[in-house]
Length: 111
Length: 117
Image (cartoon, each protein chain N blue to C red):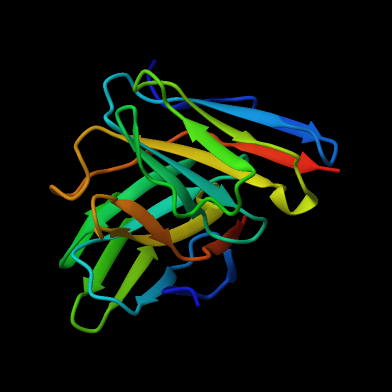
């Protein structure tokens, strides 16, 4: 069972729309990551957050640690935002620090 | 280099063939991770190195998978006698600090897409 659940799995939006992607997880964590993966595979870290909200340009990430839920919002979406968005948390068990990933949300923004 | 690089970017192998996938982490990065990403799935952890020491290989799916990082920089993931279920994107990531001691961003390579026919 995947410990990180994302919704929706697929999302199609018109350019300019406000986008929300949700992430819920089942274990206690200290920080959550949001990452972006473009076709071709490369993954880029967008946010690491442990509480509240972070904003970078048109991207906003929020987290509620008690409710084990995070959201990624994109304002004024653009076709170049089309990508897979993945949430993940860091496994601090032992000496690892590897990431435990959700399956991702595939976003397609139409012009 | 400026980022994590991986080679080859694409590899097609016949079933039963051995393959070797290379990862060049960011210079000086202590920690290196290998992940496997099947089509339509999120990446899954394979193995972790701290310098040259392989501290965790619990994610390797079978004994056909072997990884090494002999000098604490470049790493190679080797898959012996490849099977069709090995087809996936293999991602490498590196990070500077030792994990478990703060929030550490992992920097990912572009991945190697392996197709086993």
